[in-house]
Image 1 (cartoon, one colour):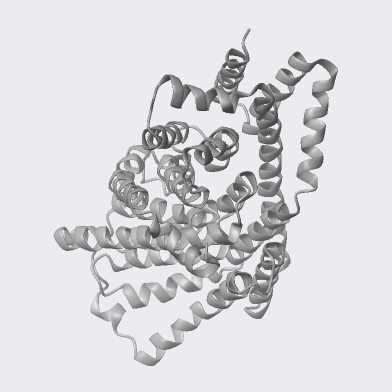
Image 2: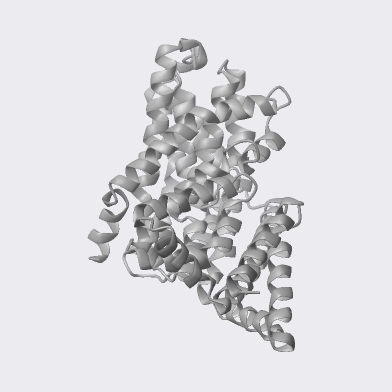
Length: 440
């Protein structure tokens, strides 16, 4: 059997196991270890062992549990609740204003935690019930929460971009900067859609009543204090890193410490909050570690077979495709895999194949990291099996059905596709800021 057929059999076996509902790390890791033992005998066991040592020596990996801890500390301590109260007052007078405020809240949460799951939890438990109670259309606001929470994997400090930087060997600081303008552009497009839609159909997002808006200016200004702590945390973490004062790992430690201090200052650092934060941090961190380890093993076996070179020869030599045609096929494959995999699993499965190919095709790996992330956001919410759809179903009130969730996301997926096309056609949307800061 040729090496190309072995590689194809490995990939097909892995996808089959994933479709049967096996855990991602178990499906990827078991196929990698079995293939290594069959191909190289007892020596194949050294592949898994060496990748484990490689993972343990991967110093930047320390950032993951620290960023995750920071996000959950801010969520569990209720600091995000204070932000929503502020947006509720300041945006409530606009038709669809609370939905606009929810998108802004999601951007703020994304800038504090870097995970879409935390944003989804906050949006579904805080914003969604409030929007429904005030007469907002359930389909539209369900889409708002899902789309807004997806910004967590694009806006710094995106944990997914940290993982991509590790696998693609690209500077995380440049990746974070590359995600800033695309993330803000996407949030702006969401807001434009909400405002225009609610102007055409006012019943979808009614403004607050005069009684609710009748608040002295002094009280409104006092509510702005809710944004001070998140801004300070974001500056302490990202600002110090971009100025070169702290390293990436030190920056994540600063963020985690600042979040803990903020909860203490607010007198919300209780034993229950600390226990929940640590428990959730441990669970998510272990999940990431196992997935990365399995992916490293799988990638090492693939690389040993020469599969990357075979794929390169197939696309460029046999099919005769242009670099842009190959890039579009890659993005379509992400959309397909996203119907049954989460963003991290997609990254660790295909990065060993796609990243070397992107380099050969002459594309910028920083720019491609942003493209991958946006495509993952879209795939995350694409029916029938988008990961985000089922997260929302688990957290949403009983009156919101799965069909409602499917319908809610359609216009936002179209907006995200527009954003993806804009970044593909105009790479400087992603690359201008890192070029200016780092002089690339």
